[in-house]
Image 1: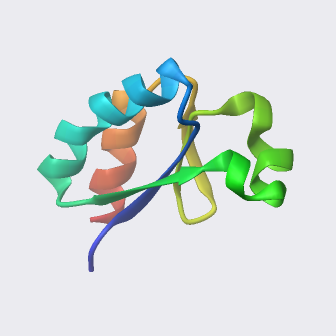
Image 2: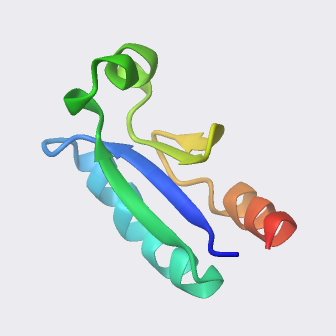
Length: 81
């Protein structure tokens, strides 16, 4: 089963770009795909996550926000693999 992660992001957000770059090697290690979603393109997502962006999700599970919590994300990915 493929692991699909969602990164809620904004084009002008340097923290978002930083998290995407930090996540890339971890995603590659676990064979996960990362879908980057512009939070401002979806009013419901913007309302829910506006001040937390960037947010890393697996389905409805929030793994981290603002910065990649590599240890927590790795532990989570090991459990669901």
